[in-house]
Image (cartoon, rainbow, N blue to C red; front, side):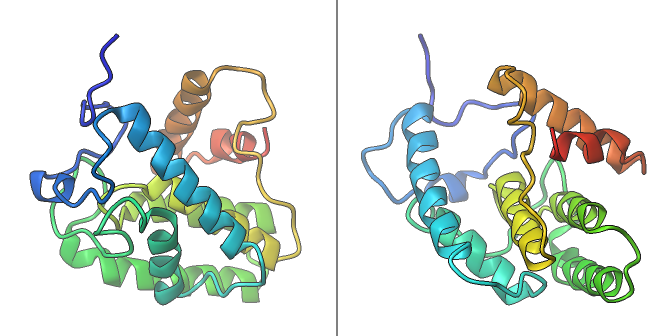
Length: 195
């Protein structure tokens, strides 16, 4: 069975050739090895991130979190992308759009505009829409949302893990819910985050 390292996935962010060259572990030749290395790195980052209360609503922290999540695997971890993608804002807009998201989210929290679950869901969704990093944006936005929930005195989201469906079906539901939220229909995403 084939397991090419950089095989295109219609729902994944494709990397540029330059970004692919910035893979750190030299032993990685298969997608499964890359996934395993990234998952180990993410688990270490989660242990660090959830150890104490964090100021999630800051550009510096969001970059630091991404670096912690992927810094053992990719040299570009924690750095904003410099090229166009199949998703996300133009690279020159990343800083401005991220600043707007952080300011909006602070306003929602300070003025109780939405319930904590809705704040964290909208935050995660918009972070994915901006797509600030070369890759790992969905995983990054989910952990950032969970950290925001903790700071608001809530439990982390389950992100579809409560159901006994396979990972591909769960991912499909997540992608579909994100696409609906892109059209301002958050119902499926609100349901998914606690499923």
